Length: 72
Image (cartoon, rainbow, N blue to C red):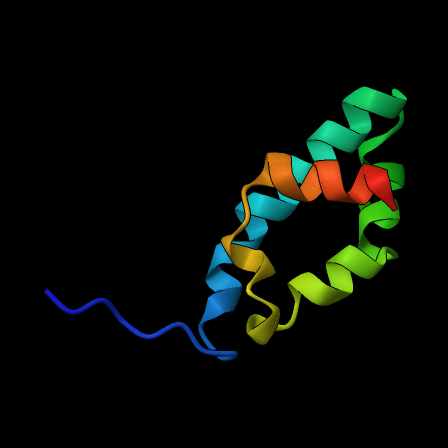
């Protein structure tokens, strides 16, 4: 069984679930609105890296991504 190759064009289908999970973790930790948590994540360097397939950040779990976001 051959799995499809992940490319810059198709990897975006993996992002919504990861983004939602990271935003939920931000929201819980900061007790803020979903909009505030989403904006914090979208404005982060980590999110910019996540949007580029070549960084392979999409491979990381939401827990790993959140942990790295907190460290920066």
